[in-house]
Amino acid sequence: MKRIIILILALAMSVCVLAGCGNDESFVNPGDDLGGGGIVDAAPETTDSESMENAGQAAGETQKGEAVPAGAVTLTEAGDIKAGGDYVVRGALTGRISVKAEGVRLFLDNAALSSPDDKVISSKYDLTITLIGENSVETAAAGTNAITCDGALVINGSGALSVTSTKNAVKGNTISVTEAKLDIRADGDGLHAEIDAYDDLTSAPAFSYEDGGWVKLDGADVTIVSGDDGIQADTFVLIGGESKLNITTNGGAPQKITESSSDSGDGKGIKAGAIDWGADADEIVSDEYFIGIESGDITIDANDDAVHSDGKIEIAGGTLNIASGDDGVHAEALLTVTGGEIAISRCYEGLEAAKVEIAGGTVKVDSVDDGINAADGTTNRPGQANPNCHIILSGGDIEVSAQGDGVDSNGTIRMTGGTLVVFGPTAGDNAALDADGGILMDGGSLFAVGPLGMVETPASNSKQNVLSYAQNQAIAANTVLSLTDEEGTPIFSVTVKKSCRSVIVSCPQLATGKSFKLYGGDTQLCAFTVSAVITSIGSQGHMGNPGGTPPGGFGGGFGGGMGPGRG
Image 1: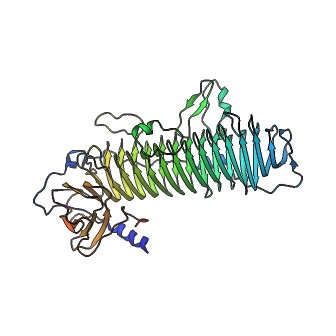
Image 2 (image 1 turned 60 degrees about the vertical axis):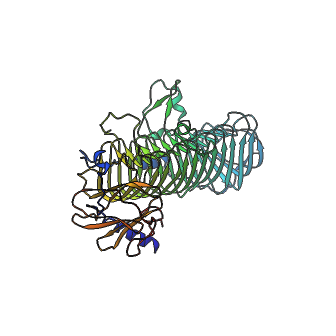
Image 3 (image 1 turned 120 degrees about the horizontal axis):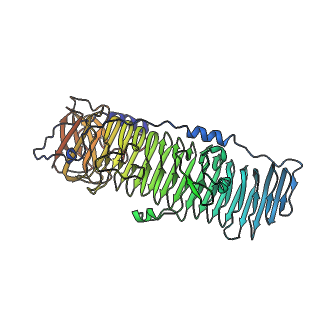
């Protein structure tokens, strides 16, 4: 019932627009002279991407585990496997198992494998490892992978496997983990998928998922504690099947995150990209590096970026709980969110890509610098927008609390749907909203608060009306800001998390000619009538009884934010 009420209130908030203040002491809203109300020359459009589909096709069908078949060969000592077939290990076994044939399935049935001076399991060919019961693999040799496969490695079964390694725990050309439980402790990467065939080339290869370099988790339960990256893939990472994933890299995010600490971070949670080729390890640059999250319960505590792709990221479902010493989710080219729940509790920047497009799901970011940032690593010329960068919000429930800019684009920002709540910085050198190419409010519900000094209001050619309210006297943190219609009927209520002086509101029902009142606690800040696309109001009025309720008894709010799912 609470969720239904919140949804109704969030929709009702769409009726917010203002024009004219009842206080005699007024001043010009500084946003009017700082980029607000201009014209956006071209509205950005969403980007088509087939990466999720292409990655799924390349990864192929899931291979599930089976019971040990009759006739499987029992290995009683380490050594070479020179013929295809089914092999099983039970109990303790010391030394290296080396697979030198196609068509080998290795069953670990409550096995404990170790090697003091080499890899534990290695294969020059495709290999399937099926887990039954509790198993362990451990290597003590310095700088050594525990499990290495030059071909396609499948780990499946209903059992569990703990892996301890002085380098990468599991390395393969491709790695697929299906309905198996892994507990990994690695000095290097946890899961590492690499295209070794590129190492001897004398010219750059054509980028292709078909050459491998990918990791797929389907219904897996994986815990990784690593000195370097949790999951590192040359081409793509695909997570689905309601997998459970818990990653901690290089000690996790620092307790105090700064610009300096973010620059020196090491150890990403999930990373895709940067294929090396040739003797000089030259890197292939491509927008087709990809991370796709279809479903699952994912927790990442990373010293560097939590989720990082040198190309694209698509989050379509699942639950992500993230702490990052740098970016929570970073894509060099395109970041798309269409579903799922993303909660970034600590980070330097929250979501970052050249193009950020959110069409669904729930996003909550608490950042040291920018909350959502569209940037491609280049520097804009003064007064010019970057045409390669944009933020498009067409759906979803988004809340940002940022010490830097709340939502920042080196190009444009366009909102056509969904709900965006921004608790911006308290210092005036940043703003709740910032876009070098302007902001278009063409739909959705926006509530953004921040300081004076760098206020940017949406463009005057927006399709939806906007209120920009400002006052010299700070509105205290935890004050309930409420909007009512002319008769005092409540429309929305938001408890601000930080002190602020600027309030920007836009919703579908900010109808021209309608009158409204804005309250801080039970004190009326202003009454106004909407008469234009951008309504700017400035007042020095003082806040009386912050946290009280306006006439009619409407108060409370949305648990510090606005929109469905909280409160």
